[in-house]
Image (cartoon, rainbow, N blue to C red; front, top):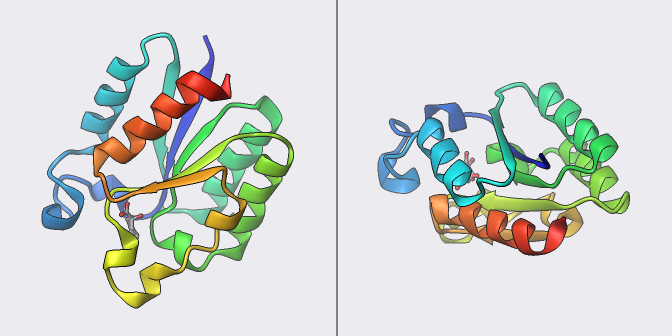
Length: 145
Ligand code: DQA
């Protein structure tokens, strides 16, 4: 079965209790269930880490396997050039990385208006809660494989 990697960065393990007015009341387990239901023909491999090197390793894995990636990099989105380089190595190799955000960073604090990964990502979906991930997965189901 083909695999889609759904990679989540720092603080996203706290979904459900972390600022529910901004990020919603659903947990990562809820998100995993929604995505699995959306794509029963795929293995939706949803992971979360608070360690940047671990996320880089998962992107290398995607570069090697060709698995499409849905990526919510959390705050690393805004300043991690190491993350940008890892996303770039996946997309330059022909892989798919869709940057997603639950909230709309452009409607929030100024530091969130910059994404260092958008320019090297396949596309960006932000501001729709879990729907951001579901739209990314719908794209992958139609186009990426
Ligand atoms: C986020 C937006 C980021 O600015 C923030 O640091 C997050 C979550 C989102 O999904 O809306 O952790 O990526």
